[in-house]
Amino acid sequence: MAFLYVTLLLIQNGYDEQLRARNLGLKINIIKWVAAGDAEGSDSDRRIFFHETSGRGDLSFRQTCTVESAARHNPDRPIQVFMTADRLDYSSPWLEVLQNYANVSVVVTDPKSYFTNTPLERWYNQGEWRNSLHKTVHLSDYMRVLTLLKGGGMYMDLDYVTIKRLDEKQLWNFLLFETGDMKLLTNSVVHLERGHRLIDEMIQRLVKYYDPNEYMWHGPSMISHIMSRTCAVKRGQPESNNCTDVRLLPHSYFAPVSNTEWQVLFSNATDETLAQLKNASYGVHCWSGKSNGEHLKVHSNQLYAVLAREHCPHTVALGSADYLA
Image (cartoon, rainbow, N blue to C red; front, top):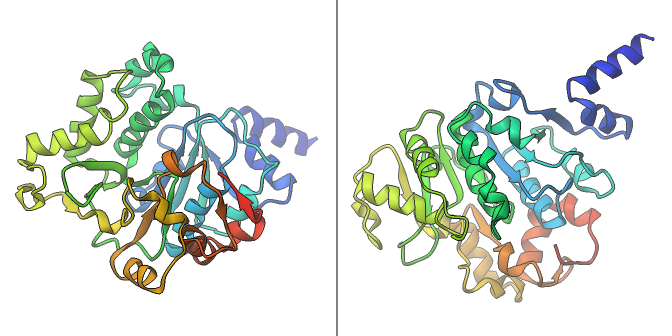
């Protein structure tokens, strides 16, 4: 009778996903997001977080690799995976992989509740974004800034492979140039501590301007515009940044392979290329928007495959020899 009461209490409070995982023998930590809850604890500035905003209940193999590689190289930092699905999917091996890392938490998030009582609540509830061709991207753009507002931390898209420990001194309050010409800043990887003034700048911009037809306006274009207006950053001139509270980092730190050369990821790796990555980069952006249809052969000499075998071995062990996503 007591067990039944506890079970009903857990389900009533939204923690049935954790209970279900335990019943399946999974050791993964699953929490339901609640305001001022565990997801925004005292060390949230140190967290590395990811968002899955398509509504699917699991992560693909490549997404799982992204999370595993971050967790593997940063065992003392909280790794949070925000999932917006109504229910988690236990049929694929993503949770079996991620349970190997005690620092990983899956944060089950109801978007409506997440946006409630925030400056972005009206945008969410009005729902114009739901009719956009880019609705998943736009929800992600808005949600990542909202997560920074709630607790700060380091956001990463779900198509990176982290290849070394993320240096907290170097990678603190930073933005990244997306390409070598240093003309556009990206929102695919960013760190800002809780309360940073740039978060408020982004929130104000997102409240004031929304265009359902624009793909990049609420992400890279917005950030680049803010930095130009508030910090006098000129296109192609990173040294023009006159703000001392945010660093602008070169693309080589996380995007050594550009979005126009993504095919390199599926070419044979060379010792020279691997050495360059090891010396100059913390991670590799794999450009899922362009590369998802390309076969990743995990036991081949493809650059992506070589990185995966080294940096997300549990994912590779449970994946198939050939997979697309």
